[in-house]
Structure formats: C-alpha cells, structure tokens
Amino acid sequence: MVNSYIIHLERSTQRKPLVEDLKRALPNAIVLSAIDGKEISELELSKVIRQKVFEPKYPFTLGKSEIGCFLSHRAAWQKIANGQADFGIVVEDDIQTGPDFDAILQEALALANKDSLIRFPIKNRERPAQDVVVNNIAHFFRPKEIGLTAALYVLGKTAAERLVDRSEFIDRPVDTWLQMRWVTGVDSLTVWPSHISSAASLHGGSTIQVKQRNLWHKLKRSISRSRYRAYITRKSKIS
Picture 1 (cartoon, rainbow, N blue to C red):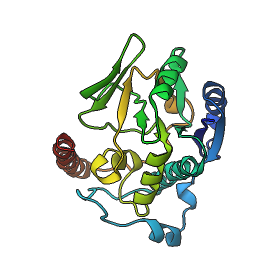
Picture 2 (cartoon, one colour; picture 1 turned 180 degrees about the vertical axis):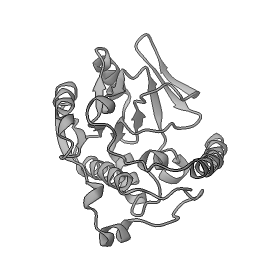
Picture 3 (tube, rainbow, N blue to C red; picture 1 turned 30 degrees about the vertical axis):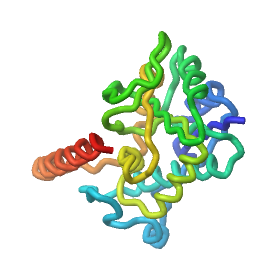
Picture 4 (cartoon, rainbow, N blue to C red; picture 1 turned 45 degrees about the horizontal axis):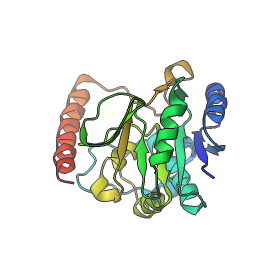
C-alpha cells in the first residue's frame, strides 16, 4: 500500500486547508509533523550540520528553517525506508494540485519502483537528457541537470534508504542536495506537465526565512551562486 507523507509545520495554520486538499488528492495520506527550525537547539544542530561535507562547498550559511526543512524530508525518507511498500510519495504543505493531477500521478506510480525518484516540478526549467515515457498525458524524462525544489516526488524504498544513509550530516538545502546524484546515489526522473503549483503566497508565505541584505551582499551572493551553479551543471553532464 502506497503512503503519501504531507510535510506540515503545525504553526502554519493558514496551510491547513491545503493539507486537507492534499489528503483528498493523494493515496493513504499521512500528515507528517515538520521539524520546526526555530525550535532546533544548538546542540541538535551540532549533531547534523557540517560546514563542508560534499564538493562543491555550498557558498551560503544554512538558515534554521532550511535545516528544519531538510530534516523533515529526511524523516519522510525514513518512513518510506521502514515501510512495506516499494515506494511512497512526499509532498510539502504549500502545494495545490490541478484537475489533471491524478492522471499524472497514476502514470508516475505505474512507472515507479524501489529505486525511483520521480520529481513533480513547479516550473518547466529542466531539459531532457533521455526520454523515458512520452504520451498524451505526460513526459517523463531523465534531466540533463536535476532542478531545484522538492515540492512533490515519488520515492522508492531502496532510494529512500540510500538518501537516509548519505544524509547523516548536511551542509546545504534539501533540493540542492538532491541535485547531486553523484553524491546521493539516487538518480531522478522529471515529469512535465506536473499539474501542481505553489500556493504559499496565498497561505502565509514561505516558511524559509530570507534575510534582507544590502546591494553589496546581494552582488556577492549572485557571484557565488553563479559559480556554484556552473559547477553543478558541469558535474551533471558527466554523471
């Protein structure tokens, strides 16, 4: 039996209607309490955070909300790894599904296996390296470079075990880490159209806090981000 894990931060009360909609849209939906970054102690942080675990070094300092988000996804991976089903579904609580979502999901579930990671992106930014399934419902493909966001995805049991095993220590956001298939040992398929969208702006805004910075800091961040992305792009081409 496939379970769906809805990652929900309990203090985000404005998202409860979205959670209820997701419970109706997904099979065997289970609301998984998100780890609140604001409540993580310095001792707890010291057990999981390292400044540099993988190449390339992530150029920014992780915020507590980003850490909480990563650990919440990891908790969902652990549920799938410990479960009986060959795969499960993970979704964040700011996602809303469109009228054709169920058809896309059924296609994904038919394709999934224990090694799967099938991402449902919010925006069409990924380009195919290899087509897997193309029909009048959806396009499933292996992307040249795995995109950002971890809004909704199907994850296999073996893939979940591998992600849990390799994320004992973290040094970057969860979606950025999942891009690095040469590190995670888990490849990814993308489906488009995904028929999902983010409703965060209408339901309390993002739970990932962004500090306001001056122009110089913004310029430095832009340069660092460009260098980091260039490395990821190069590495993705040969992985």
